[in-house]
Image (cartoon, rainbow, N blue to C red; front, side):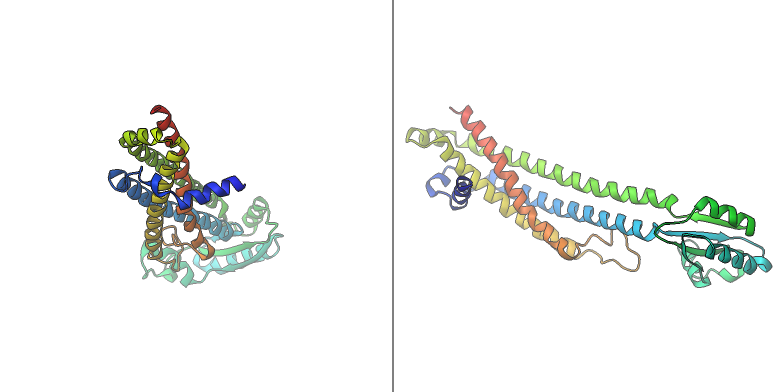
Length: 301
């Protein structure tokens, strides 16, 4: 533990003599900074997408898990009678917590996206909808359908779980896709930093040879490259993360209808997650540069 702490302190402190080995400017600097910034920016969005998809799956599951609808179709003069029979059956059904008929305004709101706000619900032969809420234990759907068929032949039970499960599954897979994207972005970052480190080491082959002649060890030389590229990646990732958080901050806020695109903002303590992105990027750069430096230095022997 003390050795690791010493290595970490040495990495942060650095050595001015060893730092001269690493070119302070050039395409490797720009490549490292721009790559780490772009990858961090994309990581923030992938993280926001994954968290938003997780929230959406949870909300959909909780909202629809214990909700069903009974659709009553009957001639105009028999509608109220059929609705009353259905309500009586629902009240007597174990597992039904509550049942209520939707008002004309509520049914109009459901149909408005397809037919517009001026739909005359009262004048059209639209089925009456009854909202059913289940208890935690639930009810016997098949038994309820048989009772409804016997008491009110025009009543049809529609369980939301039939179309809820594909939605929840899709949101869950989208969340998984977000995490996979983050892993791929991390791998791409490591690959780009490795290429930049290879290029810097190859460009300084003569300087490395001179350092070896004066007694510098490969660990001493490698530490200089690891430190410089790790700090460059940390700086670029910090800038990209900040830009990503600002972009997420100005995304549309959730309105009356929650959705994926309107719910990309982080919520509460989730704003702390992006802070880890520069740190993880620096860890990836440290590992990639360490591996690249030791491999190239071995080839230059």
